[in-house]
Image 1 (cartoon, helix red, strand yellow):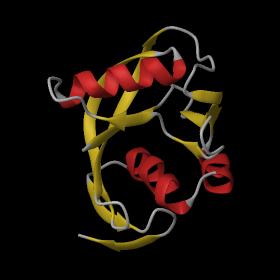
Image 2 (spheres, helix red, strand yellow; image 1 turned 60 degrees about the vertical axis):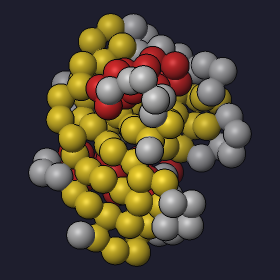
Image 3 (cartoon, one colour; image 1 turned 180 degrees about the vertical axis):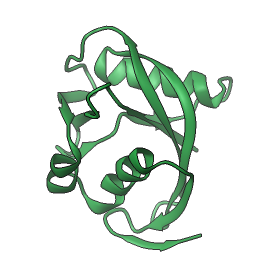
Image 4 (cartoon, helix red, strand yellow; image 1 turned 90 degrees about the vertical axis):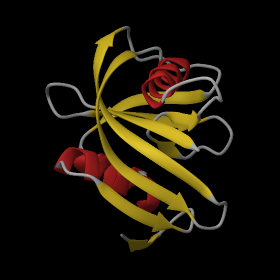
Length: 135
């Protein structure tokens, strides 16, 4: 089980990372530890990857990577403290608008951001790159 945080500023821009291991742009997130709640995991992962402390607002989606068997729960968050900086896990951090999300992220990750911005709760499956189903 993994978690991710879609951190949205007041101007609508979203916090994203460029991963050190593969160079892909994604929302910050990672594997949930056994002894932590979903909110704790989101806060930890976002802080570890970006330096930003967040307040978790709501669940916005569940996404299954069919090729790896991983389910990610994605939560909309707002920044609470700290400055966005690259860390041991992120090559770069940035605040993207919708168009930049679509342009720089693989569809399987861009949809997580767009779903969070649009409201509601989505349930989708993907193959690691492309969305292949919902519901």
